[in-house]
Amino acid sequence: MSASAIVMMVIAIVTVWGGLVAAVVNIVRHPEATED
Amino acid sequence: MTAHSPAPAEAGARADRGAFAGRTAFIFAAIGSAVGLGNIWRFPAVAYENGGGAFILPYLVALLTAGIPLLFLDYAIGHRWRGSAPAAWRRFRRWTEFIGWWQVLIALVIALYYALILAWATNYVFFSLDQRWGDDPDGFFGEYTQALGGADVTISFDVVPAVLVSMILVWIATIVVMALGVQKGISASSVVFIPLLVVMFVILVIRALFLPGAIDGLEALFRPHWASLLKPGVWVAAYGQIFFSLSVAFGIMLTYSSYLKKKTDLTGSGLVVGFANSGFEILCGIGVFSALGFMAQAQGVEVGDVVKSGIGLAFIAFPTIISEAPAGALIGVLFFGSLVLAGFTSLISIVEVVIAAIQDKFGLSRISSTLWVCVPLAVVSTALFSTTMGMPLLDVLDKWANEYGIVAAALVSTIIVTYAVRGLPTLRDHLNHRGTFPIGRWWLVCVGLVAPIVLGVSLVSSTIDLITSPTTYSEYPGWFIVVFGWLMALALLVAGIVLSLLPWPATSNLFKDDSDGDPIAPEVVAGKGLEDRADATTPHELRSPAGRV
Image (cartoon, rainbow over all chains, first blue to last red; front, side):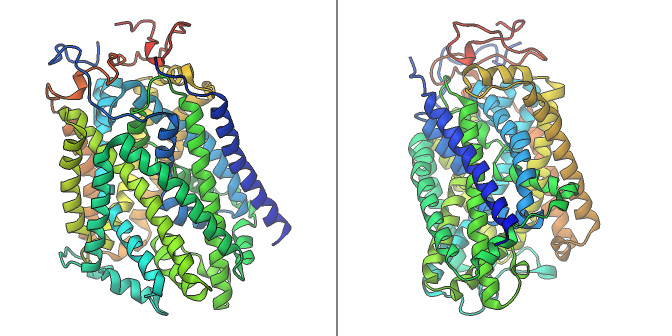
């Protein structure tokens, strides 16, 4: 694969899956309140 | 002025609506809804045709400035007003009820034909085992579907037995899951099917990556064409892909969030759903283009010559790949099995929009409303689509329901919410009360300005294309397009307006308290947000300063 294609594939993976990881970490860090 | 009628039938009666057990159950169901056929068969080709690797930029911008903001809009309305689309819109502002019914009717039309694709995919799982299509997948698909094409298309009730059987099975599975309800049906099935889908697709991708030629496929997809970013069409395509992929603005996410308990972090959940959907799409791009790279290499052509999307990718290109590849049967079962899982979880979310509306309108139990909706839906869907006119009818309905249903309704609703009702400040404050991701003015700009502009441009350009350029639809008889395209789309809007004028029976859920016993929040106060009260534990305890009831 050409260098630019590899770079773009890595960028796509890192930004989107990285975003997912960040979003999951965010909700795990804020557990749900239990209903009264 | 409240959203309730003056005299509820039984004071303090609670609506008998379903609920998700918790945030995780909701997130899986929402991901199940979002992840569907479009992730697998639409995204890869759209990315390829719109800049390749460079597409990631407009794609991310679209996700962050339209997809996720619209998702938050859906969540806010459904969660605050605790109802199906018609009930929630009516409670938001009484005259906007027509939007909810319009969304219900759009969902109804889509559910009718979506089951057909699931039926095909189910059959193809089995066809993969012995590569039933031989060396002519194209011809085989034609013989299997017996679809009429081009100028031959007409109304036909010639049933195709293989398709009939599969459609019946799909509908039976749908009825069972829907009857089990929100938690035991929708959520439980999503909690099982989504991880299974991910595992299956990851195995498929790994297998595809090791096929000869896969690297060329990946090269073709990810090589950036930076000049494309100057073309407006590429940005419209990015927004279009995000919009259709995320299942926003068509009543689904609104309905699902109405089943979430009050103390929920909506924005944090929404970010997970949005990024999970996109994450799966990227995986699909990698898998599909690895497979296409293999196919190009096997046929001695360029990758660009074999790129396909939609039905052609799934039912013609992939069978070709399956026949050529070693252990093709495994690839086939994984691929078509993934289509079935992704499609089924999406179908149930579409059907839920209709069931919830009927349940709210008539105050029925879950099982009653499921049967009243699903049985006629199954009968009509099977009767219309297991025939030789199934595919062309699907083709036309899909295009017009998407453009003049979903996109048009989204355009209308964002404009109405922002400018006519001026409800965004209230919705923003509702989202922020328990949200972990803060919503500020940027959200109002995205929903009120970016979304309508992009949706409007997309709608206008699609309309120009449909009317002036020759498209695949031009091959169908003119009357067919007029009836099942234009008139159908108009009828959905008109019928939506008519339905919103009908009174709600005294037994409906509209006049009852929420299923947890709390009263429903009052209508939005134009232009005003909600008061900041430290003692409020749920966003529903916040009221507009001038709107205390």
